[in-house]
Image 1 (cartoon, rainbow, N blue to C red):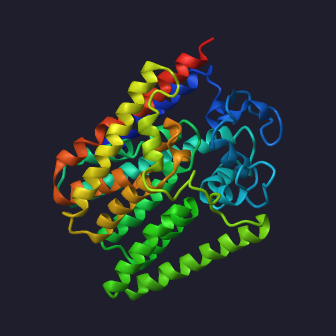
Image 2: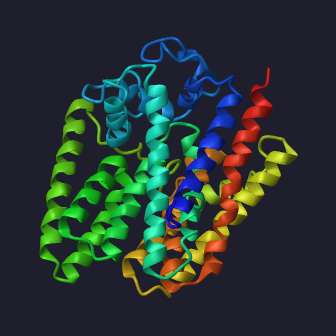
Image 3: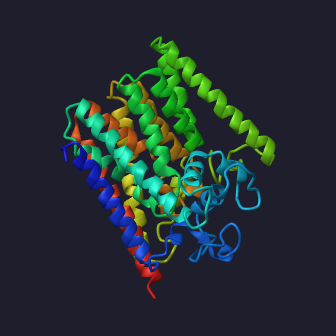
Length: 373
């Protein structure tokens, strides 16, 4: 095996092992990855699921429901139907891979797609590391830095969305052709609506540089995606956005302040210590992102960093209430730090991303603690 592929293989093996140990806590039942609320276990579209979770489950259950048939409406099964369904790429790929939404094959298809996305992200990291004469092993740090391990354990869209976004940024930074940028733009938009902000930044950069084929290609993809958004609005009667409330977004520092002032909300000293470490690391990364934004010569990366920090500051309590959310949703921050570190050939900022790899291990340990029978 050639040296550049060793980091990619290592990342895949680590995440397969992580997945295996996590699933073993549920006696090898892959339906645990869907994270369905206990009240819905055994009922359509979750009739094949045998493991239920308290507190209504988690978001992976909604993408499993969509993957049963992405081409119909799912108003009854989803908490915010249009908002979930706008992220079409992940459930659509799972639907195809499972042979048309087979309820049992989906248990394999969803994590396999995320593992492939993690491998793809490591590959992009290796490419960028080689381009900037940085040791290729830093490419293996990228999936760890963005915390792809945790969404892998709950069938979430994050690994695929991050891979697509990084593909778009990598293609732009390496001077990719217009059709490559169009491909990655489509993948980024249809995997996570939030990525539209970065797409607009790349579009503006292409216009500034006079890359008009790229501009027209991105505008064409944006038009198709906008059509999908309007179609969902017509079908569900609502735009694919979260409800308008400062609980979700709007008031600066409200979410961060809540988490900092409620570290011990669960009453557990271990949980308090973990929340303190997570929030300390997130706060450190926010400051580091601002610092690197002022020093990287790539304006697209700088805006990515500042956008990530703005998102962390403006996000409300909803994303800070549990560790499964605030350790993964602000992915622009570690992605920008990694990209800036590689571009500047400075490894110290990237070393500060490595501790993020602990959070999936904590999730696995928690699963074993809570589910041993």
